[in-house]
Figure 1 (tube, rainbow, N blue to C red):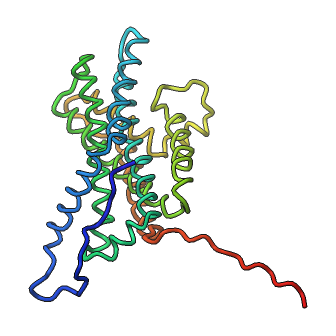
Figure 2 (cartoon, rainbow, N blue to C red):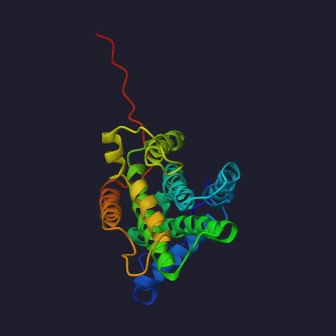
Figure 3 (cartoon, helix red, strand yellow):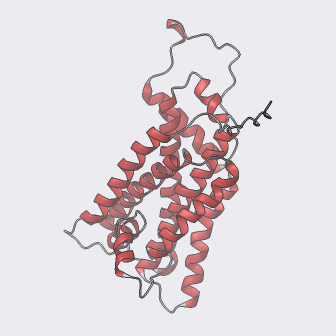
Length: 279
């Protein structure tokens, strides 16, 4: 679980006058991102699962095989990114809402859009860091080639993919009523997508329709984009057009859905009144 995300306590809740105006938009957003970054980096779970686990899987994969394919490095990098942007981000957001923390943030002078954007931007940064560290592990320990063009393509792909997954996870939180069900829901919607997309290893004999579906989900295009970037040739596009289109579509759709579905208030179960006995 990510650190306690509590707004600053203000004894005086009066509306700000001319002398108490809030900072400009950029300062507010940067301050919120810095605050959320401190919370994420203080969470051992987020760092171990998102950063440590993919590197360990990469080492274990190389121990089982004589060579390490570029697709293996890309797959584990995508795994670290997605588990951070989807599971860690989504579950922590539901927990904050159900604990009443989001409600208190909304009552603070900070604009709601700033908190909303700051969470997604912060998650994107941490998820990109998780993916980039796995790629660097492949470069340092196994000689994965990384040119300037490859590095630029990998970074752009990770940023776009992390934003798409974080936005979609934010949208899903609006449909989850309780923190107890957040973990299972995020897991059950995560692993099937990652598995059929071949992120943790290629799957042979996958039905054509399922393979076609995977190409339009946000995991396989991201893994493909990172793989192709690591194999980048001079003069070639940094990222494949299909992968960019799919990830951009998920990012836009996820953000629109998140704006529509995001909830600040804790879920309150509907209590049904007992039927009165007939007179």
